[in-house]
Length: 346
Image 1 (cartoon, one colour):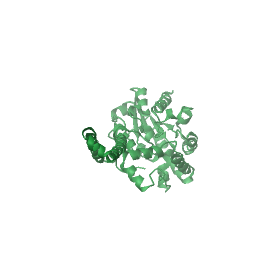
Image 2 (tube, one colour):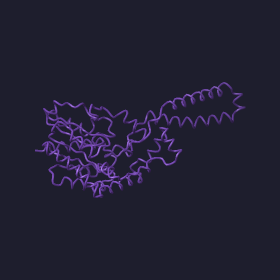
Image 3 (cartoon, helix red, strand yellow):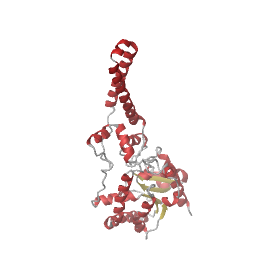
């Protein structure tokens, strides 16, 4: 899903805008100062008016999509989503994480907490990184704690295992942010292929438009990436369920989870697992926690099942938008509250 084209250049847009303004000014001059010529060439003038009206609407839509719309989507594949990341995905510290710069002295002196996760913990769709649950938790716990957020969009269990294997400190708490799609890298290594053809344009002409026009790109992905698009999410969940039901994939995934838990034990860290659901598919998400439960059944840990905790929250309050089903700012805040209670529990 990362093999999408570069954002189109703004240069053609500037050229088209210049052409439109020149034609509009020329036509205005004819209407105002050449009444006699206007009557003789009324058909031509009307045709130009119609052309300018149509191209003006398209040009306005293109300019609006290119410069004024930034909206994250679930896969960060649309142009407006990548514009959102360009404008809001900050700060990035020297380790490449969306967090403040790490302070080694404070990690040693304070009660340290390590958060491992993917886009849910990094705050995909949340404009201000301070509104993500790791930062909210850090602010609420106060000066006696230090929270390190090692989370990246696209990470899964294998990446999180690699991260904790290479840290040079022993946190008091490790918070693992878990989503059922964390199994995907294991599935990929075992040649289980996810089919994304239903997301990309199939017509050659439309594909060219989608890859070269901000407006066409916005129209296309607003349709296919909406969480109410049955084809997009039903196909994805169907494939994901197959991964969780495959014995070999499940076994490998459980081994990675147990390895994280064992490293936590070796470091003397308390493991807390935040289990996120796909908010629009709570029942299916619950089914896909079996591998996690089996992997950690004999290992001391605490678990926060977000699906159980949010209860009957309306979907629109739980997610960023209907195009981006990552957790909303309210969901981040609530999870930070649940974690605070677990950490401060006697």
